[in-house]
Length: 603
Image (cartoon, rainbow, N blue to C red; front, side, top):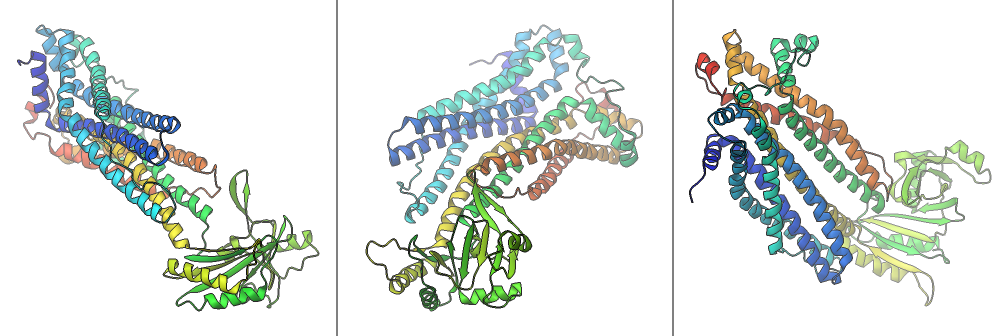
């Protein structure tokens, strides 16, 4: 098939501008891969749910909605990135388009040149993206299947223990149509503008940069701190606002997503810690009865027997609530003696536990209800000899501190008693503990006494499995979106530097050294990064706080400021812009200054 003139010009341009072509191809491939992976995961999730629970239109609707939302995010990000790549390409060739128009090229042909570029890139990028998307789906389904099987073995989930790798024809159809439509729309926007630009304006490069003395005015402090090169760098950013705006937006989006994802990971772990408690134990045994409290001597017998297990540490703690506001907490003799010594009271004393964890409006809330003096004034009939508060309260006691007044007493018949154990083999100890409880505690028929043993280490492992599986998808999705954004940054910065070779030659002709030009470019990268961070860091913290409030629907815990994620973003943004700027500068032609000034395209 014979190619048209427009298609041949588009193909030759792609061959000439190899770096930009490669970055645009990468952006198209990544966006296609994400679309294919999202739709593949949706099919896998639907199949897994159908296998476990049967066909359900409600689940199908939820999965479809999630797929549409995530696909919409990917398409939006792709349009921004790919469209900017074509816009930069069209901007570099304004003069070329003007010359073509002056010799008879029509508006339609000018637009076709850019659209053909999109078509040629799609022919390569979309198939590559679909293959990468299938590999991503295969990796994800393998990870989730492994997690499901681990949870099923521990009887946490009664599933078929499989998250199947599913490939259907409609996945390819949707991914191809969505990706191709995204590329064509991204190419059409700058193509329309290039076609409308009059030939004489394009040849003269009129309107390419709109700047006035006022619009490029910089602060005197910029020159004081950064010198003449810093002032030029600041003016360059203001003069080329549109190019650098795309870079700033892409970096800002990346910063916000990375901080939000990091905060989500931190906060979801904090949520599980609140729900599952921070008790330092790998296993536990429990006695519970609403009617018959356990005798202190029976508690001592069970404790002694449990401590006979090799290499185990036991912390016994129980509670009995006399009312909705007062709870009496008792611990094993050894730990009670240590706590009395820590507080500075004699054995046999009552100690105020100034700590409370309660559930208010569906949230877990932690507080210090009152000081020792306040408690003595409010409860004059209760003897209070000392106070235990803050970090000095053992996690095992915090587990029971749920009423307004909590007292640690030397001996009390608790109706809910736990033996928390620290041992290497938690599963074996659970079986041993169950045997000891049955031997030491008599449970008559039809009595309301419950004896349980727990493998807390196994439960913690299951929680971590669920959290890590969730974070695998969160970081994977955010990471690929960030890569798409970075292709925009690298492409835009590289094209901006390449297109300014004439400007650099003029600066050299008036006495500016190559070191001065490098310093100017370095400062441009610093200022561009600073603008991105100025926008991205506050928005990222706001996004993290929104995630915190979303997770706070179920539990309440302190908001943890994402300092580490913010520092990582600062280092990453400066590294990306600086390295890209240096790489592009090093590729500039080192030809004659006069030839560079005379260059028609400035490249």
